Length: 422
Image (cartoon, rainbow, N blue to C red; front, side, top):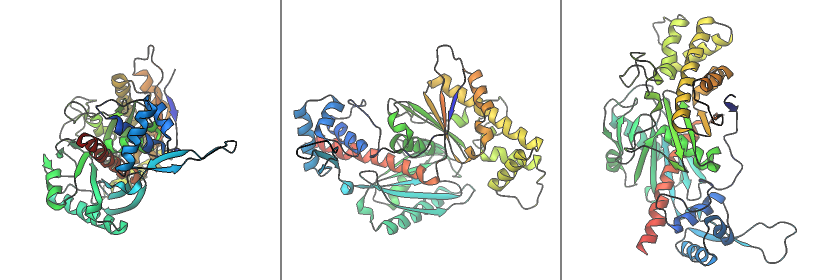
C-alpha cells in the first residue's frame, strides 16, 4: 500500500465561493451567518435548500432570509429549472455582490500581487508590483504595499471608503490576532507591528496571516478543499510552509503561530536556515537551500551572482540531462520532503495533502520514490493511504486567499454583528 498521487486541477467547476457545508457550523456562528454562507457557497439556493442543509424549520429559513434581504446581503432571483419541470419558476436566493468589497495582498520576493473581490467572491481587479530579493526595513515594505493598494484602487475605480477589509499574507511567523510579524525573511527587524503601521496610512481595517495560510484559504474557498472537512497544504518556494484545515476551519494553534513545518528540525546541528537555527526542513528544500548547493555542483564561481531562479533552472536541466551531482541534490531534497510529509501524516492524519508552490515544477520532489519513502516512514497500521495532490497555482491565487481571509473577517462582523445589534 502506497501514498496515492493525483495531479488534479486547481480550478473547481462549482459556482459560489467558500466551504461547501451542510449542517450548522461550529465555532459560535449564528444561524443567520450559517444561512448566508450556505447561499454564498452554493452560488444560488432556495429556502427549501437552506432548510434541508442546515436542518432547521421552514419558518426559521423564511425569517432568516427575509432579514438578510432587508439588510441588503441577499436578493431573490429565478432558479433554473429542468426542462421537464412545470408550474411557476422557483425563487432562489443569491448574494448581493456590491454589499461589500475586500482586498487581498500577497507580499513576496520578486513580485507583490493584490486582488479585489466583491461580497460574492467575484474578482473585480488585480494589480502587481516588482519586489526585490533582499530583506528590507518594515517601513519600506509598507511603502511598497501602499503603492500596490493605490494601483489596485485606480484599476478598480474604487476608493478606500468602498473597501470593508484588507487581508495581507507574507512569509514568516505571523501573529494573526495582533497583526505582529514575529519574524519574516522579508523584513530586517523582528516583532514588526504591521497592523499598526497599516493603520497609520489607511482607514481600512486590516487582517494579516502567514502566506501558507493564505494558500490554504484559497483551497478552502476556491479550490479542491471546498468539499473537504480536513486537509493539509504544504508549500515549497522561497521557504517551506504549511496550512491545515480541521473541521472546515483553518487551524493556527493555541497562540496563532502553529504549523511552521519549514522550521521543524530534521537534522540536529544541520544546515543553516534563514531563521538563524540549524537543521530546519526549509534549509534542505527551499530555493536558497537548493541554490546554495547548486553553485558548487555546477561550478558557478562567477564574480556576478546569478538570480536563484536561474541557478535552480540550470540545476534542473542538468539533472534531467544526467548530471550526477545535480540529480543527487534533487533526490536528497526529495527524501527530506518525504520525511516532512510523513510527519504531517503522523501528526494530523489528513485525507489529503496538497503540494503547491513554485518549486513543484521540479518533478523530483513528487516522484514515486518520494511518495514511497513517505509511506515507509509512516505508521500505516489501519490507516487509509493519504492522497497527495499537486496544484500548480499561479501567483494570483495567493492574493485571492488573502482576500478570502478579509471576506471571512468582514462577513462575521457584518452578518453576525448586525444580528447581535438587532
